[in-house]
Length: 174
Image (cartoon, rainbow, N blue to C red; front, side, top):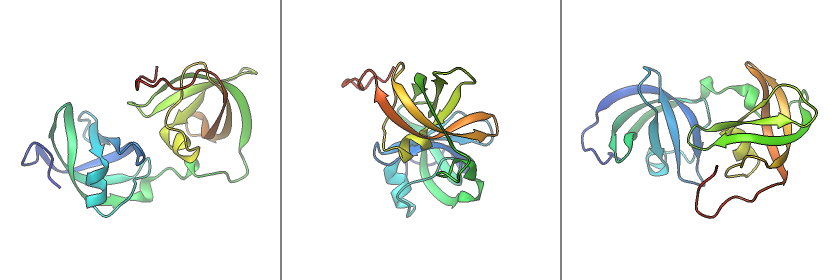
């Protein structure tokens, strides 16, 4: 499937999946050459024979100009060997931590939770939301986080919302 820009702006680009949510129908990639993030529509993923892409997967693709910047026009190859298996569901070294959401940015694909009992902020990637069947989180929500040590600190593998402000209907996710 070709993007709205006709011929590709960049061909054979290698990029990592920042996040992809098949329920929302889109996600974002980070090109390895440092170019700005590229929008990825579900129709392009499906045209490449996939239903979803895992966070951290490496893809080779063509990029075109979209209404708001770069977007993936064609996926040539998907390599999941680069997926961080530390983010796979529980393997026993997981702890349960209650806290609240400091912030979550769907555009960036991550946010942070703060443990009620103190300690380091907990990284929450979009993959944790996908595994928890959540679309987004809002600042101030009380949550239960299933946490494992990650390369850069504590990382949530799943999140349960216990209470807090409900998601706003206008699409703004604070």
